[in-house]
Image 1 (cartoon, rainbow, N blue to C red):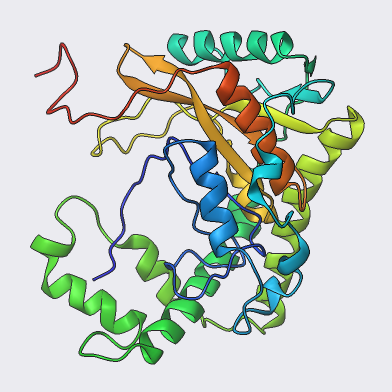
Image 2 (cartoon, one colour):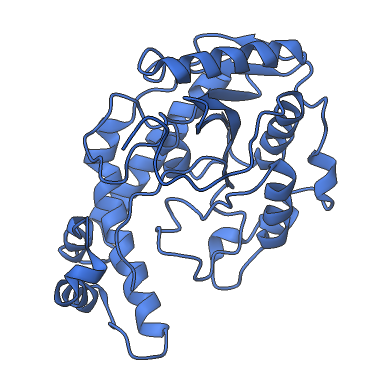
Length: 316
C-alpha cells in the first residue's frame, strides 16, 4: 500500500514534467514533478530519459515531447560541453551550514572553471517557502487527491478505491503501514475537494508555477546564463530526523516550474555520505543540462560504488 516516506535523493535526473510518459509511475502530482531516475552515471540517466520520453495520449502535457530531445542520446554526451558556457553559482541558503558541503561545492566550482566554463557568482535563486505555503501546498494537495483517486478507481484488484479508504486502511494497519511516520498529508489532501477544474485551485496552481518559473528564469536572464549550479542538499540524515534544517530546497522551484534538474556526485561527507551538485535550467533545457552534467562528471571521477553500512563509522 502507498505510504508516506522521507526519501533522500543523491544521484538523480528530473526531466521537465512534460518530457516523459507519466502513466502510472507513482503519485507525485504530474503537474508538479515527474519521477527522476537514480542512475549509476549521467550516461545511464540519459538512456533512461530517452527510453521514457515521448508523447502519451493519456497525458496532454506531453504532446510536444516527441521532438524535445535529439534523436540519439549520445549527442548530449560531450566531455567539452561546459567549455565557454556561462554557469551561475547559487550559494545563498546553501553555504555556511555544513563544512563538508562547502568544501565539496568550492572544489566543484573550481573544476567548472578548469574545464572552461565561465563561472558567474551571485546567481542565487529566490527562496520559495512563502510560495509553498500560500499556493503550492493547496494546489498539490488538490492534485494529489484528484490523481490518486483516479488511479485507485482505475486499478483492478482488492484494494482501497480512493484516498479516504486508503487513510482508513493505513489506520487499521498502522503498525505495518506507519511504523515511524503518520499520514498527515494524506489527511490534508482528503479535506480538499480534489477538483482540478475549480477556479480557486487554478489560481493556486497558476501562481505557484509562475513564481517558480520567474525565480529561475529571472536569474538566467539577468546574468545571461546557460545553467545554474548549487549544492543539492546536506548529507543524508537518519530517517527518523524530522527537525527542519536551514538549508533551502534546491529542487522546489524546478519541480513546481516543471523545469529539468540533474544532480551528480560532487564529494563525500566524512568520506562516506555522498554529496551532490545540481544543474538547473529553464524549459526544454534537458539535453543541455545532461551534457553539462556529463562533462562535469568526466572531469570529476569521484563516484564510489554504493555499499551497505549498518551505521556510520563512529556511531553506534
